Length: 417
Image (cartoon, rainbow, N blue to C red):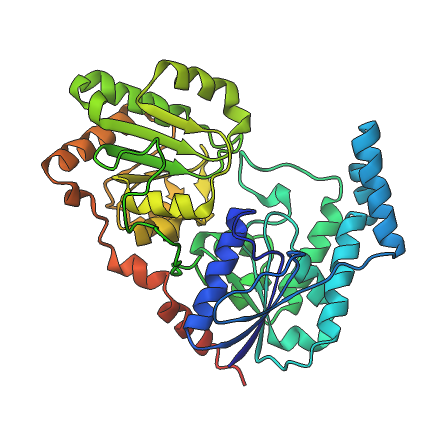
C-alpha cells in the first residue's frame, strides 16, 4: 500500500507534536507501507524508511509580502494586527501563503497514493486546509486530529475564543465532512470532537501516538549522563513543557512532603524537571534555591538527552492540568511506556492517560493532591529501596497498542480499494 503523508514539521526538536508525527511516519514504514512524506519544515530532513520532500515556501507573492509587512509592524512597532486581520479573513497572511505553498507542491506529485494522511501540530492544521482544496484526493484522505480545534473547543482551563473562531469552525466542519477517514490519538478525543462535529463519529478511528524506535548514540547504553543526573539515586523525571495550565506546584509540594516524612531519603532522591516553564519561572526559582534535592531546567532539552534519561530514571511523571477531563494523549506517553519505568500520572479522573493505564492503576492522582502525591512517591521509594526492578512498568498491552503492528492492523482494516 502506498501512503502519502502531508505534515507540518518533521523536526523532532521543535515540538512534541513533531515528535509524534515522526514516530507515526517511522511506524508506517516499519509496518511495510511505501511512504512518501511532503513536509513544510522548510529544511531538508530525511527519515529512515520513507522518502521525504521539503515543500518550498512560495516567495515574492502578494501574500508573502503582506505577511512580512505584518511581522515588521509587530516587531518594530509592537503592533499586533493579527486579531483584526484574522477576524476579517479567518486566518493570517502567513497561513494562506503556507497553505498555497503546500497546494502547489501537491499538485505536482505524480505519486498515486492509496491513502493520504494529513498531520499537523499545535493549532495550525495547514495540511488539512491545503488538502481541502484538492477534491480529487478526498476519497483517499485520512485527517488526523491531534488536538481539539478551534481553541474554544478545548476543555477548561485551556479554552479561549479566537477572533476568527467562526471561520475556523467552518473550516473544520468541512474537514469532518470531506475527509473519508478521520483519526485521533485517543478514544476520549474522538468522542470529544465527535460531540462538536458529528461526522467524526462515523469516520473516526483511534491511531495513538506511536512507540517508534530511536537509535540515538549512547541513549540508555552507558553512563554518559548529564552532570545533574546520578543513576544510583531514586530519580523522578518530568520532561516537557509546563504551560500556564500545567502547574508543577502540587508535584513539588508533594515531593517536599515526602522528604519531610522520610528524612533519610533526601540524600538519595531527586526530582528533575526539564523543559520550558516560563509561566512558572518565579515559583520554580524559589523552589530551586531552597531545595537541593530538585533540579529544574527551565528551557528545552534535546530529545536524545530526554530519551536517554527516561530510560534510566526510577519514575517518569506525566503531569496534566487541573480539569474535569483531559482527552489528550500526551506525546511523551509512548516514550514513557517504552522506557518501561513506572509512570506517576497526575491527571484528571477522566483522562486518556488514566484510561489507558487502567482504572485499577495505583500510581495516579489529581495534579494538586499534595498528600496523595507524597504518599505515592513514598510507596515508590520503598519499592525502589527493596529492588529498583520493582519499578518496571511491564505493560505489554500498552506496548502493543502503541506499536507498528497495531497501526498496520488499523490501516489494513480500512480495506481501501
